[in-house]
Length: 404
Image 1 (cartoon, helix red, strand yellow):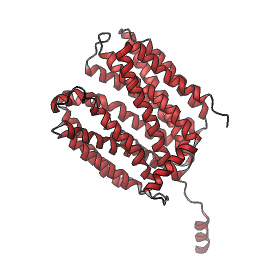
Image 2 (cartoon, rainbow, N blue to C red):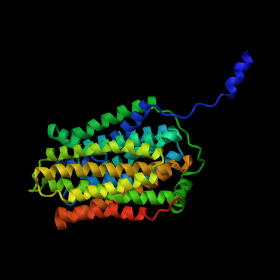
Image 3 (cartoon, rainbow, N blue to C red):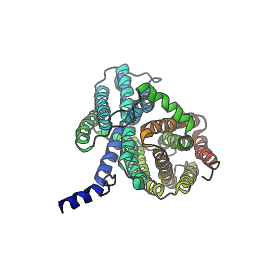
Image 4 (cartoon, rainbow, N blue to C red):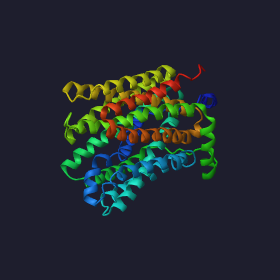
């Protein structure tokens, strides 16, 4: 009898790889809290520049240095997720993020604050180590849903960071925002140290070989190329919209205060519900349908936004609807893209994710720059029309995709 029981245990199938709802929530919350660090500086640029003596020309570097740090981290740090033990890498980056936030809070000169901003951007790529980490823990059948849920947390962090920073700075000061976030990062690191499992990648490459392999992946992975181009265009429209709408809302047409603009951004966070829905569609195989829907939704959203510049209450409501629809479309396409690239090879997930994110982050930077120029040159009318062009380009490229 004991021998028979032992035989049954030996022949029993191994338990299926899975991730609990609580663990998925932890990943989503961690991504949102860390990603928020990238955006606190945007609404606080004015008070920071006044307090530290930035010149008007240098004020823009407060946001730019953070973005540069994040872009460098995507290419140089995120690939380490395929080489180093993932939990230790995440905890190290979150710890560095806490130190950088403290440095920003207590900086006494523009140079020190900009250095801290660069480090905040570098350390915030912890979120792009967490996303493939969660994808690795999820079974194939529900990987899209898990990634979608985690990305909804990421989007909430991005969309809520600006209004939260605005409200806290009104109640206290900009220093409080950075100090409070540093405390949250320390608490988050302690919590993740307890709940995250260890994950040691199987890659045996050296760091130099790891970076070199990224060039090969970029040149010889058609799925990665297409999904990165699609999302670069979509995120370009997203960045243009959220760069220029605060200018429009603060203009005489609407005349909103900073708190009013913060509430508008808060409403835009409703688009985060798209990520779980998109993930489930991806798991069911509705690849092309979800991609086409996302691009068409973004086009319609931006056309609605274009028609919402009159300054009336109806225009404000339709502009809010436009922002929600655009966020929904962008997140749907993002999650569908990640589901596709994560299915390529478990051993390459961090590298392809770094390339994917770096490419569409570049599209977002272009969208912000072009949006600022367009608004200064031709106002909302020109900026919104250019915004419509981004998802149209994505749709045109998508229509060249083969049936296979």
